[in-house]
Amino acid sequence: MMVGLLMWAPAALIGWLLVRRLVVAPGRSGWVPKLFEISLGAGTGIGIVAIVFFVLLWAHIGGRAVLLSVEAVIGACAVWLAMRQHAVKSVAERAVRPWWTWMLIAASALALVFFAMGAAASLEANPHGSWDAFSIWNLKAKFLAGGSEVWQVAVTPVAGSQLVGASHPGYPLLLPSAVASVWTIQGEAASATPAALGLLFAFATAAILCGGVARLRGDAAGLLALLLLLSSDGFASQIAYQYADIPVSFYILATVALLALADDGGWPRGTLLLAGLCCGLAAWTKNEGLPFLILALAVTAWKGGIRVGAWMACGAAPAILLLSAFKLLLVHDSEAVLPRSAGEALKHMADPSRWLEIAGSFARSVWHMGFPWAHPLVLAAILAVAFGLAPRARLLRQMWLAIPVLGLLAADFLIYLVTTADLSWHLSTSNTRVLVQVWPALLLLTMLAINPPALPDAAPQELSLARGKAAREGRHKRKRATRAA
Amino acid sequence: MLVGPKWKSARVRGVAITIVAMAAVLAAANSWQLATQQQTDPFGVGPALERFEAVASRLPASGTIGYISDMPVNDRVGTLAYLQAQYALAPRVLAPVDQMKPSLALGNFARPGDFKGVGARAGYTLETDLGNGVVVYRKASR
Image (cartoon, rainbow over all chains, first blue to last red; front, side, top):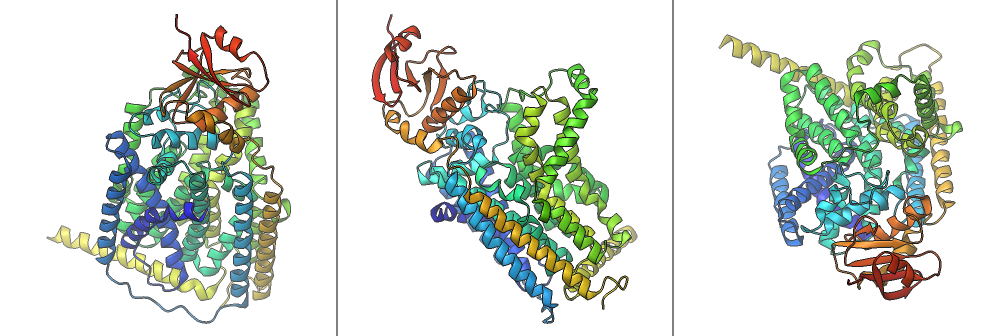
């Protein structure tokens, strides 16, 4: 497993250097910026390498030597960009902390140990992942790693014969491409590679949730968000599956966290580029990422203006271009579960029993995300009662962040409504995973809606708001000067 | 300075955080406990990789291979058997011989039987029986 994890180190390093360049640290020292940068960098770096690998393969210039050379060049560029970054003056953190801050640190460390032990036990029991891992994701990775002669099998319905649930030629290929890139370098299809990737994405998701909330609401809020995620058994149980749901949950969470930071910080371009990159990677990971991408771009343009939306779209452009080319040029079949006509879809939608069955399944999936006695939503409710909700003005100001996440859930609901597959089968095999995709982002939004618990940590938040205000004022001044000129 | 109603005192907040922290740690511990009770390799992928290891060297490294089995590909057991074989032998593509007739075919059988006769009915001759229900067929010449 250690070798499997080490194989992802170059991609993570590339991503980390890029993130360091693009996300301007909010002037804080300590673990929060580092945790955020490293976890964000790991996910984005893997996404970048996956895109590069697939483009090279499609251009028929794949192979170990070419891939290693291109990765080395990208890494060198990332180092050069990171070295050009100006040092940001750090603000020393206050030494005084409430007693429970230390308890939170200890509890988070302990919960992380259990989380890691649970993941290790699951991976030991299922080293090859669950059903969809060997029938879809890792199978596609084997075809992609097979080289220029066979990789196209991964996007044809021949793979998996004609078995519904096994043949998905139109599934985006971030996860298989990432795994295949490492298998190509390794020269063998080592089972530890996808297992390590699943583990990496799970821990990066936990870290980015903690780091993101900590940057937005203070360290204590970040640790509480982490604890809410670690108490989510529905999330923890997915780690060993080696599916694309946890990676897509990472990219959705990263997008929402970066947009929240961008909104607070006066829409800095680097953060917007990264947010765009992450939502683009979400779309290149799973089909569910596509409605999220469209909604995130649209709502950001609405909230911040066309220029803000354009910067974000620039970040998403590589993934959008690749996905468009993939869907238009390579994939010639539609998903078997989609209706063939509007009439068929409307007939399904007009059936009220389907609405009830889907709503009931979503409710059950939410319930199964945690144990009844420690359900994350119950724990969040306890925090909301104890600390109160964020001020109404702040809640209203940040409500837009929920639109892409809830919009994705609405899109999922719609797909269930019109599915031509047996609805009970479709719900039982996917509904929990659909919820896992948005669960970390929902926890982040929940923590943003609760008053930040630790007043000593309010400093970065005030600093961030002040910097955002200053940036906005600076922009207005520049606009006025331009108009005057 | 703390703000808000009086009952939301620092003590109440401390108690709330303590409850959340303890519950989360116990939940994470419970998840770990459940993870240790999981069935090992419920889909038998590991044994399948070992079972098809020997046949891999007798097949071309890529291309389409026929698939013959006594387990119908459309039922759950047959689907799993097919997917195990497909995963073990990828990047080769396994195609049931009722769809196409490649020059070589893999036989994947759950029970002992007349493998030669099964192959003949599909238009193939038995080339190698590797044991454990794994057989290599070659397309019969007319």
